[in-house]
Image (cartoon, rainbow, N blue to C red):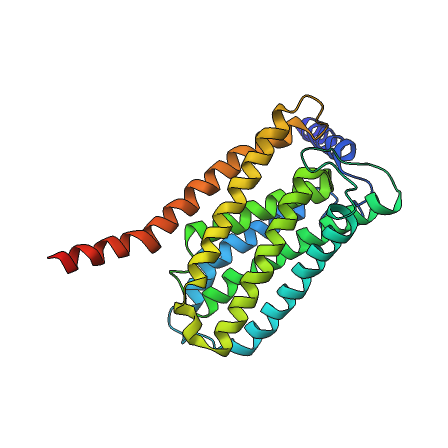
Length: 273
């Protein structure tokens, strides 16, 4: 029994030894998925069970100044990645935007790209704080299934990218779009702290729209890459990302309809009566 277990573990480690990108392996949470999975499990346990239980008989925390600082850090980090993406990749045209695989070299640009993709992963790890803040402020409705699933699924995709293939057109394009949206989103969140009335303006709806559009673009881009005859981006990655993009489009569409369209339809019906 013990020998069988050791053989399984040895095969498991050999798999990751063969597939992890050696350029990022020394970085945080990149030497296999074990500790990363523990982080995800701890996150889900706290936001779904422990956190609500601890906050049940307590008043919500006033995290105004913490949120101000947190949002500011998010804006700076996301803008940095957008800046690096445009100055190093998109404006110089160093990769084919339609489809290009990962350059596994130690040259300056591929090595820097791998590091920035890991930074993107760390930002997605930091994004989990959004839910922790909601729990501590007792905003249970905001901590919805869509919210938690979205954060976890993007984080898992970011880990796969940073640990296995830190580069390639599909990883870099989605990361650029996602960071651009998050820079605007956290700027909006910061503005609502300064002026709470902005919570009720049209920009909140537009943020949902651009989040929905990003998954449509990512899905179409992945489908094009999958069927591209000379694309060197891993086919198995497309088979992971495409269903995920479709699911996120469905989830965000459902949220958008229920939040922004159905209330208007109900209001029109009441007015007609």
